[in-house]
Length: 155
Image (cartoon, rainbow, N blue to C red; front, top):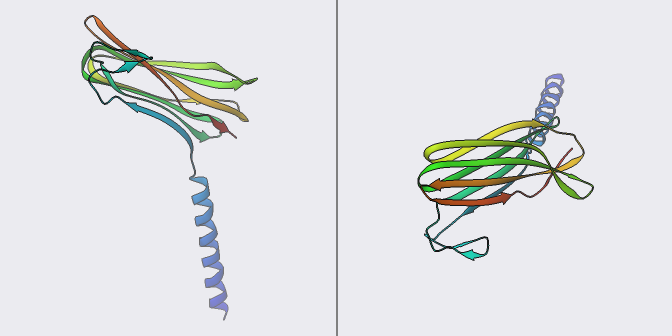
């Protein structure tokens, strides 16, 4: 009987431990990913007469806990670009308006992609999002676009 009680207590402890681990693994994250499907299209509401260069771009924010967020941006071109970059901008909602609080630029030359990720300390109890600006140039052509993630609340 004593062995059965010890076994039941051990099983109860293991099941509670697993529940705590699963709950702590939950991640507060928001991402925005865009892809172009045609060789020319609409950019900022104007029809483009030349083929675009950027065909995929991404912005992401992830709450890592303890007042730290991870911000990420990614740009991919459909060809080798002379210059390709992504600027990742962390924004905080202050008095109902989005305010830039951190910015990081990642650049590659003679490449078809660039990405970057950074951890940033933030104040708890606020809403945050990431805005990204993506640029690629190839000789005289330049392609620029942006992305914005949904907001996340850092607790």
